Length: 520
Image (tube, rainbow, N blue to C red):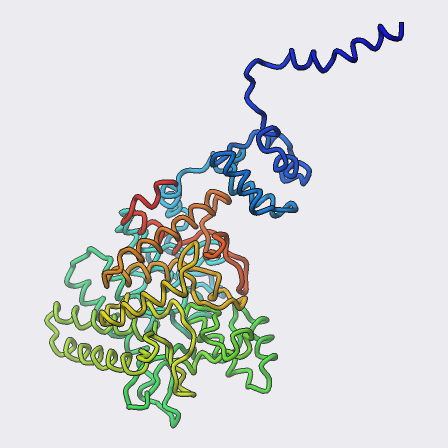
């Protein structure tokens, strides 16, 4: 009797084999073995069915080879791995292609004209505009140029014209384009891209052209106002007198208090800088914010210590390249308007600025462009993406451009795009981060001098990084880690989603080279 009762148990394995479907394909647990078990044990997804139903983004053997190579351990590492290699329910399968998503974001990031509420920090605007996104819900100066590149690629000419009207209004109202449209941004500007924004306009109305020319001349006067008050040290506001008497510019802020938007952080940084005067440190923090590179080892005496910031001691190559571009464009617009006197004046200013850039910001012995420290009277040692601005501007010689391309190739190219600098400091405008505006400046500048292969390679790496992160997260971000091709880190606030200039630059690159999005 006992033997008879045991017989069915002995037969169960054989019965199970008979009941399996003939030629059954392997299940996810069969295919992914240790990876499958690790993901389920770590509860990467609350519902185990989610991973069981996941769709691989590439051949399973390649995924398992990557798993063996990377050996991710723990929920966070496994989550990153899975998001990179699989599409899951409610994830990438529901997302439109990257290019389509960028087009869909313009109305989401667009804002209507408005009058500010009394007592708020907002500055009213009379025309529509695009914001970067997330915590940045106002228009920003240099961001907007790179956003406009995408608007141009997507046929959004009316929105470009509206934003240009807003910027001209701001110059007429305040004498310059502020950092952003908040009252607490009025004491500084940002890298001057207004003349380049006007290059994106198709409007040929002569009355409007005259108004725009006047705005450019007035903005230039803002940057050069310090020429009338140079002190014994040879600096006032944005202007620095160089050793030969020529004038170049620096970043500056009219205030020396903590920034309203970073009050606590600035006070803490100034306290760590004692015995330096708090006002001096806070103005240098503000000036770095005007540069757009807030913050970077470019501005630090000790790259690892923010409290050593001395932005106002630095004559930056990017700012002076952009001002040269503004001067040449003012001269050209004045010529077109029949204003010969203004054309001659700005042509002369541009020639003098170019000579000073070549003398002080080109390091002939090292064959590189660099910022210049007005205290030590020496170029700074840092190799940064700012060195590409003279190529972007078109003021480099062919030999200078070849040397910059070689340095860029050797020191600044990451797996996922152009690094901002070669130093890892924890500041967001240092390695390993890459930023959309610098990718575009590099691509345009290198391409201008015949370095098309390098330019396209940078664009390819950047678009792949943006596309990969979009596939994993559904987001377009303010900055990226271009060494590990993931969201960027560092800085005073979390990495932001949106994002205006990333969308604009990526769209412009894909418009120029559609094949970069072949795997999108």
